[in-house]
Image (cartoon, rainbow, N blue to C red; front, top):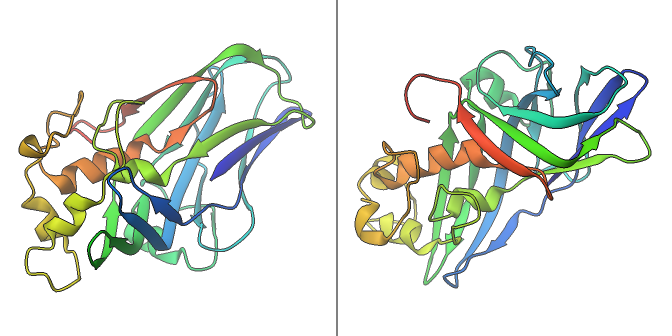
Length: 239
């Protein structure tokens, strides 16, 4: 999915483009999302304060989704900050995304992974993370030249929490369905130790099982093509 950050006369807007809900993983599996709900908020330019504006979006609805606008001075910026956060009631809620506002989750996804057999999943993630993207050239808000950013659902299936180093893998998700009932639970994800499966945890040393890994990855979904993006937890405990 793509966020378009549009500048105009001291303001900018954010628009989420239509997202593909089908993923082919690097280990020969597939993922189909039936539900993809996200909270995005606190988009800023330069040294602007993040503010407390949030939007809860149902990305399974075809078409684009407008987010609550931020404010920007009519000048150029070399930094854009985007926040994926659970705290604060969203200003606007797309149809079907009420659960995010009620439960305070930043990401709720549901669907099915298929390797040798279909396994259904439903997960809530709670990462409070600010992503800061450094642009190669100063960005001047201009409605004719929107800045493109992305939220990559494939990162939930990455085997690394280090940007650019991971592969999308779904086989560990299927394997986690220990009772082979075709329904993956959070308890089953917690029993999957990352170490013997070759996962790279990066700086998220507390992510030792697959559930922790997925929740940490939910804070790394936002990127800006052509920019160097880094993520920072906004809570004392690891994401």
